[in-house]
Length: 344
Image (cartoon, rainbow, N blue to C red; front, side, top):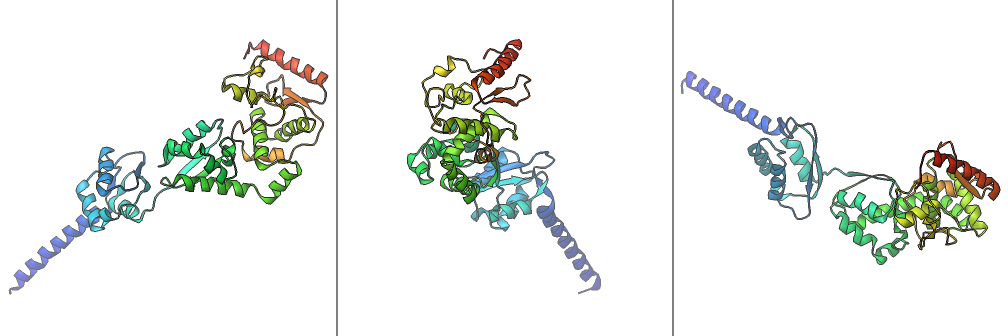
């Protein structure tokens, strides 16, 4: 074999090796998913999904630029036989290899769940359900089940007390039961022995504290005022007075556009009407923030029985120990409302 022939073979092999090396480098390293796009794509793979299901989803949303290279590497890495359900975030300009490796390993991205400003159970279901594989109907069925509520120490009305407003990271394909277990675990972490002891000293259960905290939350957004408002309601309860909390009337009407509670509003027949019924309503009227719960547990010790919004619309309230002073404060506020033509 001549020297030139050997050189020719070497050069040919070198070219082939270089070509294949470059090709494989492209397959592994060249951006191929969400190419030249600004936003990430969230790939949701349900239980019992197949490789074809994944491909169909990627094609439907035009995620992959070159399907030949993607499928070649997927088969090379044995991904078609290793489909794992979950939620996977695909960032712009992602190469084949890292995403296929991620999918095969089941290294899914958790849902960052934040909920607050929730009034009704249906609102909670609508906020949470669609974010997870179990959906709104799955969560509704669970929260309306007496057996499920009893498992966690609640009934179907008070079970919403278990949901503490916060931000949580939870996997998309979590079961309804595991999701509720997580919420209950967070609830138990919050209700430390110290908090439970404070509630017991007030002759209240954690659920009752939460119900009252929901009223406090609806009454004021001023954190420094919450313990004082809580003190007013606890003073009324200790004296056997009805709470007469306007937010419970609004909740009873399910009309959250009401800005001014009038006499006819307070005539509604509802267990949430704290003008007609003495004691706490049967459940919370919103999901109170932990600060509102702590405000009840750390109530301000005073003799105030009445309060109403200040006429300066600062968001704070004017407090009074007797009805005469309260009516003066109330007239000042009502006159301010009239000047602004706020009727309801």
